[in-house]
Amino acid sequence: MVPLRDENPTTITPYITYALIIINILVFILEVSLQQQGQLEEFFQAWAVVPEQLTAKPQGEWITLFSSQFLHGGWLHLGGNMLFLWIFGNNVEDCLGHIKYLLFYLVCGALAALAHWFFSMDSAIPSLGASGAIAGVMGAYIIRYPKAKIVTLIPLYFIFTTVRIPAFLFLGLWFIQQAFYSIASLPQTSISAPGGVAYWAHAGGFVFGAILGPLMGLFRDDK
Image 1 (tube, rainbow, N blue to C red):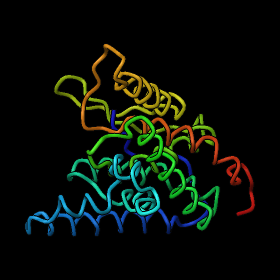
Image 2: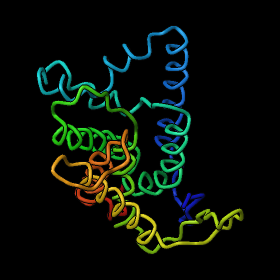
Image 3: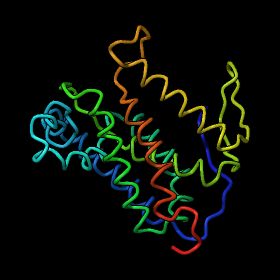
């Protein structure tokens, strides 16, 4: 299922959501340039969350909890994240207001990265992407607009069709999938999870967003 748009009107222009999308795209263009110069891996080591480095020297690595949110591993990674941010971010920004929304986004991303770190403290693999922060946005969205309709693209063999799915169903299924793969990624489980994805960051970000959103004024009319 691929979300195309939500049907909730907004009362403000989501400048922060637009700015975040633009910054992520610009950083990815920088990554492409660095890759051509053979410097991308070094860049990721410096600015992505490398769990073993964060474990060894948290004082010097804490900044990566935020910088990693603007890094992506490929065009599909970037495109998928920006699509979800575009669809769900505007309404959450509308509820919180610009400044609180930006703070909410960054804090959710940092907490999501810590959730991933907690379950992989000795990993040397860089963790990067806006997924954790966007999962936080989705967690806030589902409790603020559970009945909102999400226009969703669904493939049926060789035919593609669109349906309007309630947010609680679309995002609920997404969270269940992330939670399942998070548990499956634990060493003591016999279930295999697809590799290369920080599922604990996704599941953790979603939960943190659902908690932090109301605490920061998600249900208030004043911004």
